[in-house]
Image: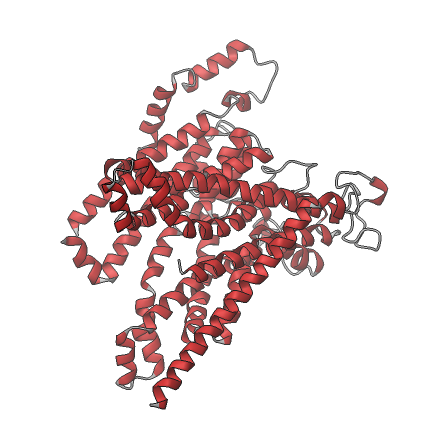
Length: 326
Length: 284
């Protein structure tokens, strides 16, 4: 196990370096200078002032030197300051992280809670009416633009019926509310975005559970379990589902980067000040340090998620653990 | 003796019933796409009005006999804009996927067939590209290039070829062990010739399936980018930017939000039905 872990970590190094080069390159090759934003396109800013500013920020150095400086900073998790707001990028991210994490964790839990029973029910009779119905819903779910559902939700539940708030996280009078009141207020604001993310995410996961379960139910040990007279629920859930859920570990690992990237569109539609919205605003303002930090962290989380998934998989399935060590 | 036979006929019946649905779904997807293609090609004859003609007195009219799907904020006919939008969406989807398939097939073929160090370097690069959350990569690159129809096609292609590369590489790894490749090598065919004439034709089927599914994905991506204002730029109509313009009038003009979304949904659904149908059919 230790040897496997070390090999995995070593193989991540070139990919990590590639990630930093691409993140840095994409922003630095962009036309326009970051000092444009800082000096706010102020025509009064003299050439000298601009040069002083660029020197101060190290922007007049050759690209490779800038890259190495940046790399040296980010390995110590120092993401420098936003060109636009002059605040440390790390602070801006930490402010928004809880919001995006809350939304995505809520959606993920709902997706898991719904997708697993749906997938099992569809797998029990492949080709039956329930399977065909869920297949249809899955196809529609796959094909629906989530932001459009968001707009429809706003139009129907927000504007027409007036049941749900349509933007932001807090009501106007949130300041005056008690702790409990504020929590309910936030939850009220999250119903639509979380509900829509759940519907869209449900499609993929329930399909995975279904195909895993169909595969498992064909195995000999399922026939054995039935033959020895176990109740069907024990066959399905104790012998079937536990094995069918193994691949879900990988899916969970892969959803780790969604904790920061999953909300770009939804947060824009619902004006929620999370990480996704931060990214969108930074891209529009060409706030290089913010964009580079988020892109690098997003890609880093993918690697971390993959690694964690592999480890969890090996932990849950002894066959893999033994195989890898040989 | 009758028992097993009836079991088998039951199973066969079960399978053919499933196949029937698959064929039906594939046909539905295909029909919708043929219809859409016709609409896109004959857009100037089908659309009742000029999609760009501003007519302020008629702004924000609900659907009526005169304007079947209503008008937008500038009094332009929504139906005409949707018809022209079909052109934009289909062209962007097809070309973006074309770019992705071209790059992905080349990369996968080279990595899979040459193997060794080339393979590990190329696949590390693929891993690196896959690590980026795609929406981050798309937005960062688009903002760098400034949005236009051509740029989005290229950017969607450049950020979505990795799946094709992995698929092709995996197929090539099995195909290159087959006897006919060995035979070609023994008679002295060049590496390039073996790759293009002997290996490539054998990986076309799964690539075609992936490409069909990919067009749906590319159309969704285009609509998101256009909605965010980073895709097709107004006044050129695209389903995504009609949604963006409709957002302002969300409470009053439901037809501006409902109709483009339905167009996107139906189109993407058709590509998904066709792609999944072909996958079942060709067992890949």
